[in-house]
Length: 325
Image (cartoon, rainbow, N blue to C red; front, side, top):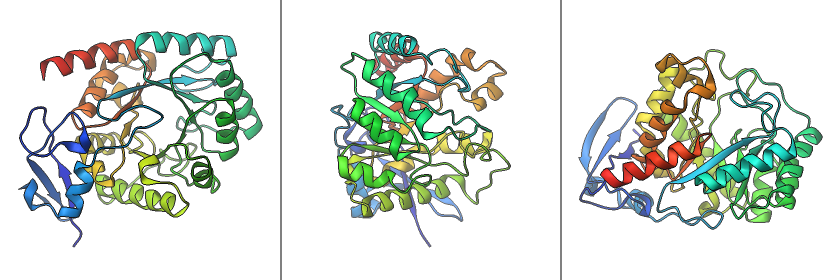
């Protein structure tokens, strides 16, 4: 019977430091597919403790010992929250400058909507949207390219991007992991069940938290086999990508389990539908308060990177959270 170990982190708690970051943990939830129990951290196998404790390597020049804010910049006409607002080079550059001024640590540029039901964008169109915007940006912030396609990633890296963010988790394009290995840039591997067009059509899991952990673990191993170093890999549970409301909540409650993969965790829940469902807010761009609440819940479980639309409110909330906890 396989056992999984989810640290129960706190600020100022006794015990080991979680992933070399801002939280510690004295106890761990030992989980199997039959049940769970709470144990002391000393009862966790030593090789797994090493992975839970190990300081995460810097990503694109950013240390992972504090939460980092990744500002979302969709240069698309049809993204679910802000489609069409920043799909010209001028508006994209202006928004990038605005997010930098508000306290973003890095930017994530995407040229293909992956909202539920979205169609695949031709590669040349996606390259035209993203690479021109990246090349025009005069920013000191690291830029991430949000794409499933290696050709788009390669063009973005040539234009100045420093990180690959693959929402397909390496499933869409077999050339993505070799691109990361060859260039040595960090890559974020996200979990998704199905593709954007079909992913919300009755997604099912036996145990969503453990299933996502296992799937991400398998893709991390695939990246390692392709030559990507573990300290260049980020993992993302894929909130809203082939998940129901209950699946999303289970993943958020159990997020700290993913530290067992030995990689930084990226949490991207900003403005997503489940926030509107729970809060009764239909318009995506009116879901800022709920998005900030979920971001802080992620920080409380040690998520190192928060992918967000609303930089200034999240930065302010994070500063206050750090001051009072």
